[in-house]
Image (cartoon, rainbow, N blue to C red; front, top):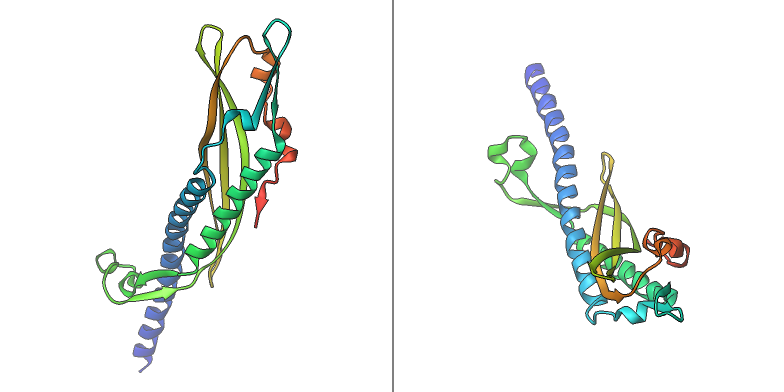
Length: 208
């Protein structure tokens, strides 16, 4: 009886350890998959009608026709950032509500049995934060021509709460919003000054 009891306790401890490891591993993989789908859905809906460059940026010129300033339309940028963060957050919550299905064989810790047996649905509690911010890039497009590209970065930071521990999973996706070729000389202060970074305080970056 004592030997049987010791063996039972040993197997129980092994199963609990394996269960915790499997749950964390599968939860991480599931959340990364959810994030990819959520971002894709949010991008598709937000940028269904590709914004015009002129609706987000205003290029002003001096009397010689040279570019004197490029001004970001804070209101339009705010609207896109807010919508992108909101849709990504909602999609993540909806996808995670189904939980994670894990074959019972995975809890044995033996690779050969990982896909065997009936599946157990385990609920995970993802606590997520979505941050959206615009970035700007200038590249040469020919003689006296510059391609100005606007991107939006979607940064997700998700804490997976499981019975044994909490794991953080982060991801960053960058999507091209619009671009335009600007003809004429552009001042170096604009080219190297982090055009949209100076407007960061105007963009609501977090949805949670």
